Image (cartoon, rainbow, N blue to C red; front, side, top):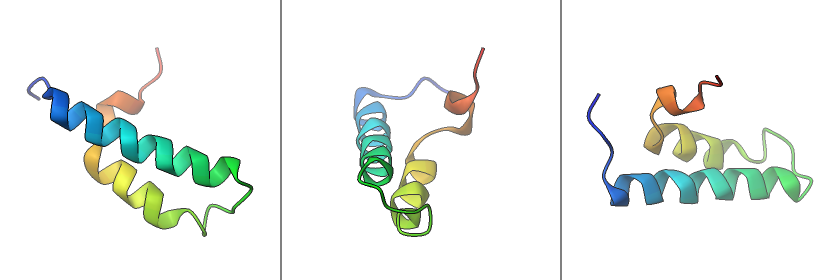
Length: 51
């Protein structure tokens, strides 16, 4: 996997923030599915790994 560009990282983080804001607003996982789908599309799965 190549190192993501600044633009790629920004897209990922913006979609991540939209998803978490949706959940923070008290909506269900089903209500926030479109945000999660975008988050997963733009963020590499390896970034989700915890140490």
